[in-house]
Image (cartoon, rainbow over all chains, first blue to last red; front, side, top):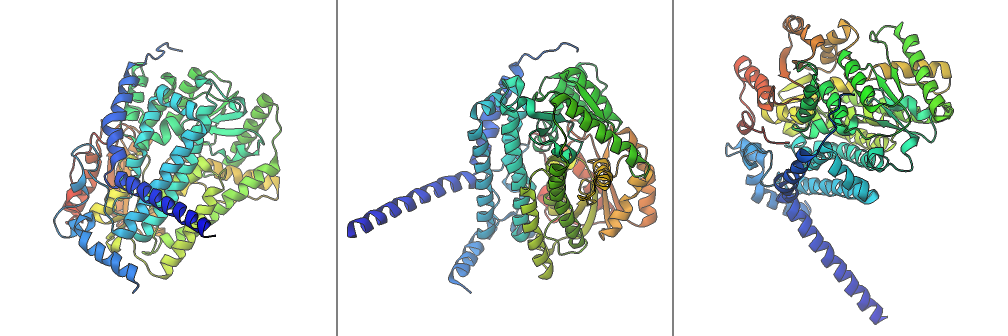
Length: 61
Length: 535
């Protein structure tokens, strides 16, 4: 019984720790507007370069 | 007072100097202070106080989870979609879009706004995954031939009677929604259309749709397509370009232009029946009226709740207004149109909150509203987050937009003949039709709507490429003077922000508010600023 309780407490502790770390990481990303900065300054310029290099079918149909 | 409330109050007091509303009130900054110049990229997210910031954070997480779910449900098609279609890249701007839509929102209005927005996000992400997973350009999928692609201005409710087939609005993903999220996407497609010789003075929405077709950027699904003449003459032109380029057998659903007249019903009703027969013939299926009635009931409930919302809109105690109202209604009505019961769930929750807020005499936006405006505005009001800006800058609340007045009649679900008439009445009053097409009375009705909703102001978007509406410009100004409304024409080129910039649009309001009304802005940092490089 004691062992099970200790195991459960340990697992709960780990879960709380993981939840705290996840919260800290996502909240930091949220409040610093991190994902939007990454998208605006890195991902979109990369994608736009690719789109500009695409060869599209210019035939008049 | 509970300990936690005391703690939150203490933290709020300590951090209030980071709140843009507090900054604007105390003359030490405002909404624009936290942005990198021109870009629309905020250095940090808006601090709204502990409770509202955490609510906004939880809504952000929920949206993030919906997007992760979309990728997880169809990882390869989504990746292929990003690589193939320029418009898919623009969806990455969604978080920035949501942030700027709800700037300055607090308390009840913030909660309702996020509930409504999540409805759109959850529906749209599923739609994107489904369409790309079955797009024949990307290799197709198990449901590729079980889809009915249709012009998105045809309300899809009547197509829900086809059991086992999925109606897919063609323009919603590559044009209609994305033009609201990214002001730079449609100019590319407009340029494509013009490089093929399309005149540069036509409606930019229709030009952009033609450009998407010519760039081979429409996902291809289904065995046939349904095009339409709705809402106007320019739509007829773009429908023709699209049908030629896409090459699927097409049935043009040509609804009566004079849709407010009784005589229009038998004609438009026959058009719907012909469209149904066309789908039956090409897909080898039979239309099921009971299935249609099921979805009509969903639509009926949405419209019934909408009419109750309107009663609250007429008062100063509506916690739902501005962009949270108009964008949601536009999407719910036009894109979901009875097909997604999740919107009913949201509507039931929202009307409960609105009833309570009304009983509590809750005044949204800190009671800073100075004017109540009826907005006559299309997509240019979304990518500019115009209603949010008018509220934050000048205290003008947008009570209702014309897009929210689409078909609101009930559909009889017990008698097929009556059901058909009701359905036709609903379908004819689609996006941009109710107040823009079908005769002078429909345009003129803007004054009745403004009066009915106790508005002292009318904001009228003036699409400089819309030949029909340009003709009524002077008449509207004369009428506004006669009827005593504050009236502002806001010039714009719909989806081409190069012709009329966001700031040019804002200046139309700035000039009226400062020169004619001699009012001072609530937040001076957003009177004039450069966001030309923002999505």
